[in-house]
Length: 313
Ligand SMILES: Cc1cc2nc3c(=O)[nH]c(=O)nc-3n(C[C@H](O)[C@H](O)[C@H](O)COP(=O)(O)O)c2cc1C
Image (tube, rainbow, N blue to C red):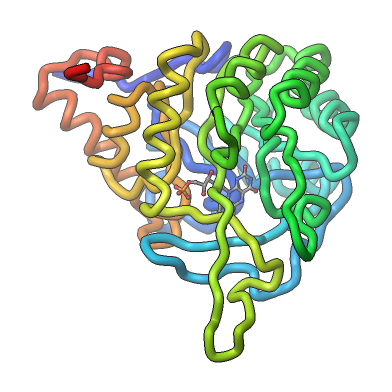
């Protein structure tokens, strides 16, 4: 049996449901020596803004128990250079390119970015990064201020504004740093998002006791990797109960087994992030592993695995 592993996210048909997460796969070419890029369902590019950003001061990453902390600060070349230089490189991978966008100056910037990208055939879909915890305006000396995705009204407003200017598949990426992720997910859905990506990193910090300094310069950063998998899974499962649109699940997926957990919890597709740094070929291994699991369990399509968690309660 050859199980079907393709999935539809909005209008975007992916030949398989394994993609790579924003900010963890460069512009794909760096990974071409480690895996056949065509094996992947899609690549989500590093988040871009209108103007170039140098990112935060170093150190920007450190190890954490079962994961890593990062505060890259959305380093990116800006939309002009992205379209001219980076998009052609990404296109060479031969798989759909989902472009992640963010704003450093209010919701209008999302609209500017979406309008420009809407015209380009090379762009398969847009991912709204309303959940990056590492932009300077969000992180100050003593507190981390609110992200768009920490407020259902702000989420609704941004998604609605972007929805008006693009017909491309729209994915909204949510933050786990909230009390009730379902509320935010439903706001994005009501505003016209075609899909939800969850989760972005979990805010955290780490201290070097010999110097009493924070291990990353911005003090607070985003935790990723296996440490956050149970949080991500719980959130995917909670959102799956209430949302009608597909979920792209991520957070600590390291191998086939952890990917399968997300499908069973309710994700229609999954994204591999931090694991790419540990094993650059892992996402292709997961595609094969998921296919074998479906064959072994006589499941004809990945769709039939989604949300099949068996609960006693
Ligand atoms: C170094 C690094 C850079 C990241 N950059 C972005 C980014 O630019 N945009 C974004 O939406 N998420 C970014 N993320 C978050 C990941 O896409 C993903 O949501 C998160 O790391 C959880 O998945 P993981 O545990 O598999 O890494 C970044 C994560 C890491 C580790």
